[in-house]
Length: 161
Length: 260
Image (cartoon, rainbow over all chains, first blue to last red; front, side, top):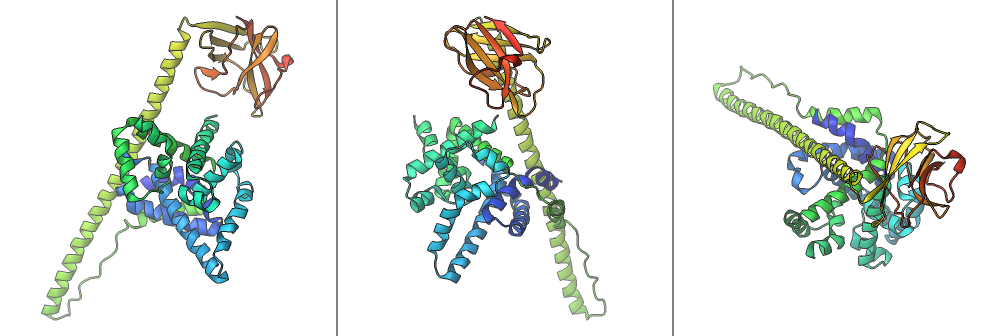
């Protein structure tokens, strides 16, 4: 019963995030199933004091997806024996990807500054930590943090209508 | 102040995205317990993330949705237990009996545990929903209180705007505070617009229309905060403009007008 409620209310939002991380529909569907299994297994560990239920679910799904993405990218890297491809690959495609795979996201993100959008995309959809973004793209860590904060802030004000 | 510094350090965003080490996470949770403004900020960040996720939803195929719902209950379906083979020797029979008793007990406990778990989960979710609802009601109450305070304050000039020939039944009121320059708008009756249009409020200052912000015909708020108007206007008026507003008013679409 509770699970039906969660599926009805949250699966589309979570599926959207998973899909944007792995960028592959069948992998995303598999991960969505894994995520809901995981919610069910772990729901008694959810603690309202530590945050919202949705955040908790989303992070389980994101972590599974990011793990999958990285293991896949690692394999790719081993095959071509060139791990640096992986980084530059992401670097080159991420901006255009925002525009291509976007349905609702385009609307949401178009109001953000380019640099805010970049940090938000890397942190939220690509699973980079703030310090990883700073290192990979040679942006000072403080700047990354500020941009991420501002991105969320601006986005929030747009979504509020 | 320490809490403010902490909020602007960016650690809360990383917390919400689950990007912290265990030690850092514990630290954030401690700070949240000690400072209500930090907890509040975490909630705001979580809401932004939730908004982002909802805005970027992707439709889940119906069959997959059904699978998701089914999988969650499959663990509760009971399984049949093999009957005891009675032709075995007593000793074997005894040990089999013990094994079966044990597994029945284990199964029974497991079943109870599952039931308890699903009850707990249900309560957690219900509790969560109550808290959400309460939050929302509180927020609405607060908004309503603020609105009433503004509407009844003598610091605000009330400017009723009557419908023009375009829309005689329309009516809205502007509340303008000369010293704080704040402007609020209360819509009593305005027609619905198509989604690519918005209403735009204008302050007429020295005979020139000055933009005072746009609003939607669907905005449910009691009072809508508009752009500040710093010098005393002669009148306020509302026109229909393309979404986002215009630089100059489309005067022939004027809906309501009121002198200050």
